Image (tube, rainbow, N blue to C red; front, top):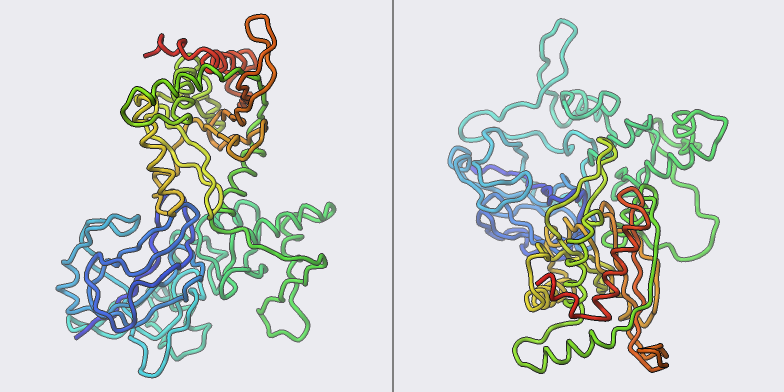
Length: 493
């Protein structure tokens, strides 16, 4: 007898909590094999093909293309063979929550949709599980019942049928250990980060109206409630948050009123995907890092001549960005304070041994910062090749989460946009970022005489907790000296 298994959006790692469906790779009725990609999703960091850990026939899909789903939301259901055989089958792909180990002994079983009906696209109605038909017994025996609410005498009551009232359906599901007690019941929130944020700040999630699909409560909803509470100076935080989304007149008991209409006219653009991630990261950087910026103009004429000479000698062409990166790694070897991070909980500065160099890349999806691993161990030719590979992947939207995280220092070449200077925002949790403006002909005093030289402005934004101005100035001056006299780099080769 076939068994229908539900496949949910897995944890894609790197702290990602949601993804947008870009393209379905299978249709209802298609036969899929274990680890076959079934959907292409776009996270805040990259495009990812999600493999299904089950083999069988697709019986339902949840969510249309363009729908944004949180981790843990249903993706599709698959009718598989005998449960005993399926339990021994393993998935070869590695995703958080779906590893190479064998499938768990107990899996959730759901009844396939009736002919002529369509699954409701959307999300679970409770934090515990999707409300739906009761599980059906498998060929090996009856399906295990969901945990039931304990009776006053300590016995476990039998599970209520799915056709019973919603209240009884909620009561038959036991309390999950990872869900706070005050979240028992039909609270539409899945993300553990959202639950923790609400718990730590005393927010009653039952009083919030979610802005996500099907009313799902997102992190932004909790933060909006906290801001509304902070604006009410005389009220306590919990009281203010609870009072923010009042129940509308004439609504049914327990329902939530819609958000009030915005008073300001204009087009509202959701902060999600890459744009949302950038907004969160930059806001956190401004909140947590006491940054300072210093800058200097440098004569880049000799650096440009050196690059021309190197490329004229034959072999792979060396990019200007690679030369600047090589200068950065040499400077970080002299001033390791700037290749570090701050652990405020331990009140420690952590100096890092490897230089994983991030570089800002503008794409159609927005600003991304790919990371060149072990940049300190690469020469200019290797750096050029890696910059080219990562830039092409960024434009194609195929960067993996691992290629977008873990940077220790960032190089930002905003000169490509035709600007001279900037005060960069540090890429949290790094400690510094070097900005490079455009290289343009300008009047310059060279060897005691006024001449036209290729001049560039360099700016360094640094975390004032890891060093003082003397260290930052020394780093920037060394970078400028290498730009003006590339032969200085020979000491570090």
